[in-house]
Every structure is written in C-alpha cells, then in structure tokens.
Amino acid sequence: MRLLDIVVTTVGGALSATVGVVVGGMLTRRAQDRHWLRDRQVAAYQDLLREYATFSMILRRAHLGRKPWDYDWGAWSTALMSASLVAPSAVANEIDKFGQAVRGLLDAAAGVDTTTTPLSQAEFEQAMVAPAHAQLDLVNAMRRSMGRQQRPLSVWLGGASGRPTHWQPDEAGSPSGHDGMVDPARA
Image (cartoon, rainbow, N blue to C red; front, side):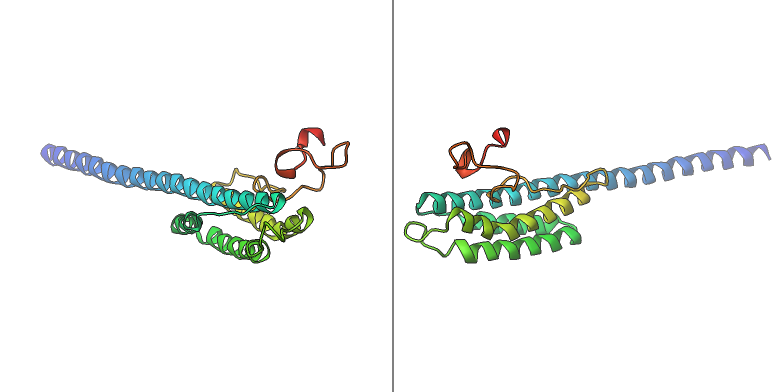
C-alpha cells in the first residue's frame, strides 16, 4: 500500500506541475498578446491622429495664407488601414464616422483654390466643426479601448480644429498665436 501512495503522490505531483506549466504558459502568452495588441493600437491611433493634424494644419495654413498646398494622401490612407487592423469594432466604427466627417471637410476646403478663393477663417472653422466633433468621439472610443481608467475628454485637442469658443482676440482685435489661433495663456 505504501508503494501505491508513493506512486500516486509522485504522479499527482508531476501532473500538477505539468498542468501548472501549461496553464502558466497559456496565461503568459495571452498577456503578452494583449500587451502587443495594445502597443500596436496606441501606435496606429497616434499615426492616424498625427496624419489628420498634419493635413488639417497644411490645409488651414494654405487657406489663411492664400498659398498652394500639397499632402501625401498615401500616409493618410496607410494610417487609416493600420488603425483598422488593430482597432476593436467600436473604435473602427468611430474611425469610419471620423473618415466621413473628414471627407466633408475635404469637400468644403480641399477643392478650393487656396491662392485665389480661399476660405475665410470663419468658413474654415465652420468646415472643421464636424471633423472636430468626430475626432473627439474617436479619441474617446480609443481611450475606452485602452482601459476603463481612461475618462472621456469633453473637448477636442490639437489639429486645426478652429478656435475654441473661450479663446478671444487680443487687444488689437485680431487673433494671436500660431496659425491665427489665440494663445490660451492670453485668453
């Protein structure tokens, strides 16, 4: 009987260790996959928002400065495709809505000859309203996908989204700051 106890104990211990190693390996791989995906999501989201900020600022400067403009639309397309590869469905839906709002901006602002008939600052800011709201919804979806500890933002940040309503013209009555934007420190 003693031999049977030893065999059962040994086999049970070996089996427990094997199961522990297999389960531990599966859990570790799963955690590594989640970390890898999260890192890829953050990079793709950054690229998408960077490209949006880049072309919207180029477009804004062209209109306000009455200058021609050019942008590598391949970078925008690549950023959209990269984000779609790693985005969960809720974020992908917001990317689509954002893309539709950006198409509206492009219809209003990109087809205009910026050297002869540019949009005024007010017209450009009006064209930016829908993309700015879509950007905020997209950023909040991205933040939610990154973790529950991320609280939603209530205002959009960055890009050429126009002048927030709380910014005012300087003493001379004209906007101050970069690209016709009022410096928030002066507001």
